[in-house]
Length: 158
Image (cartoon, rainbow, N blue to C red; front, top):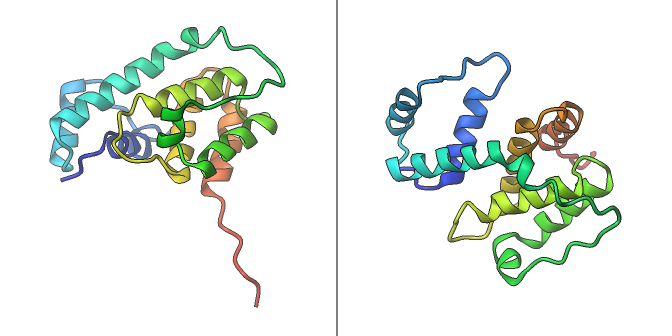
């Protein structure tokens, strides 16, 4: 059985957030389908709550407007978000994919996962995709991020 809220979110994002996929509007039917896929009801409910809070989030992060600010992570954030992921978030902000407000939203959504383990770079990439997908007017940033997530890693040339 899959027991991680992030696994539920990634499953939903991969299967229902595609432009071609029909998003089930019946929450109960979606919950049943997720349970049949092996997800625990508690984790499914937490994932739904996480998504609902994401939908409300743009208004919550309007206060972050600082340009050229430096983000200092709290001890809890450093425990939860590994060094590579923190560096990647900073990189995305520097190249203009994330704004300061979106950076804070990403960090907030990572911390809201209530995971008992560290969130690694690959998981952070998916969270960033979910955040950008949910924000109107961020189609270009989403596409740039999608290119980064799905880009083939450069292999050694022989």
